Image (tube, rainbow, N blue to C red; front, side, top):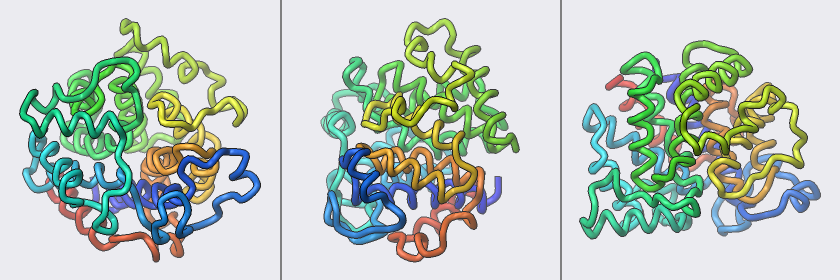
Length: 313
């Protein structure tokens, strides 16, 4: 896997995240009246244009650990997350301004040394926010590069990554399906084929899991044809996965996807990040509008980290 592929994924994720930060929590109806068309400042968090959120922070905290150690160490990844939570490391501006409740609780459990890292995530059904899905892409990239596939053994690793903060089956399966789509894109499949093949694999791997019944809409061959008003874009992990994949299937370039994802409203930064990471894989870093990249916070650091990550693959 070459460094340009990784830069496409990570810059794609961070840029769409930053597009969504100023309008997080805004309704779809309001965004139809004043849609996002490019980078903005101010808004929901009062940040400068190009500022990314916890989605990118946790993604790069994961990448940094893997790149530095040359492999996966869940405790080290959680230590990086703690450096963010307690000391504002891995942030766009030196300030933590967004963290999910389930993620916060997992980090507190880990900091108290109550549980091993992969047991810190909440297991109850009400703790299925999108906090693990938004940071899972580096794990998918690493496993695809090192092992050449995402199979049952690799999905077990993906599930452990999720369980650092989100350990319910719905969260783990969401991360698994996303990783399967990413792996098919990396194998050179078209968007439509990547989605179809990933869902076929998901049926094979998860078909006997009761929680997989929640994913029936994704398994429907007409999923891509669903109207926008049937796509939810709040913080529930399954809704984020559906929204990201629906946007991917209904656009043909990075810019269109990022704007479609963000303008769905509600959890705009995470929907953008999850969709944007896949779009960056499909269309490459060169497809991201130059004026958006020009204001992206810490772009040089993000690219340097991609180079370090590529060097160990």
